[in-house]
Length: 503
Image (cartoon, rainbow, N blue to C red):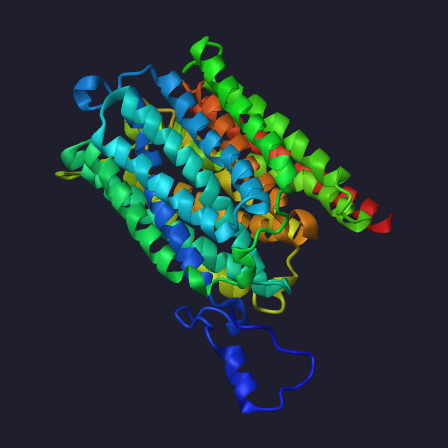
């Protein structure tokens, strides 16, 4: 990684040249300081991981509730949506484990490499092993692998910007642009493959995408900062046996509750939601009681509480695209134009494409002096409001019988979702890095991903209330509830921030 400029002027051309080595020039969107060496490696790895992840997720609900004759598993629709939401929740709960391993056991760059390998194996299982066996093993491997990969790539992007500020916002925007590109092309390809050749060929395409991402990361990870190859807070040898026993006990507990029927397909959302709540309380408690966290950093953790809840609302809205809105697109949107019928998955890819473009524009905007003055919390609130308005726009087109929403009417809905996502997600990532205690950066990042776990789980749980014939009522409640909650949280943040800064 190119080192930052020293405090004194350089004395020779050699030092200047050394400081410029490795600066990425592939993206001319923002100033050089926002493109340190390694950013493209991390962005590309995350792009291909999201290609495979969303390529699967956009089809998962359909795979679960489509009939066996249509290539699916034939589960009841509410159960299928609950499982799809809970799967997303488990993926992001695994971020806690991945963050802890990178902090205490194995350096982040190697955790990412192992995680990517597990994800690849999971997609291969889904592609080649039909039925529930392939589903359970494949999803389990993807959950474990994503837990190791996603949180640590995000954390390493933050490590590229030790000075923070608007340049870090721009860097995260570029990183998030890679995410959205993968999220666009993954569903686009797998949706088409499913329509032409079935679910398992589509799952195979997700496996190929992950293989490409894993290969480029293995080649390019040498460009990452040296700090990413070091365990920040290594576990003392005397404590290793204790943690190994705790891990074994946790695995045994999971196996017990599944074997005894305490956790079933029809209540898995409730179980995952309880885990999310317990994990959030535990992480906040650890951050606030950690002796290495300074008093000023504890105040930052407290300021993060309303941001955490805002993020929970945001992800609950966004993941509607893969639960209730997935059903809506399949049943209420006119997907036939002339002699051409498009797959319902294409609607989600339109949102991802729009996010990529809007994110690129925002990356430039945040480097402008006036735009950079926009407060992070204002970006968060505005992002959620835009998405809630998108949900509200669905309502008038959902009142008629049959496929009552024209395809063109779905475009402004997706644009509002895309603007909200492009505004909220990179800003939330940067805000999380800004408020994170120096001694617990990984745990703070995992806390952010825990909001994704909660949002996905809540989306699946709430979507269980979605019923044919009452789509307008459903999306009205979603929109109004989101607007009320985000307004209250915006006020709560202002009051808490003012009080803590004075204190």
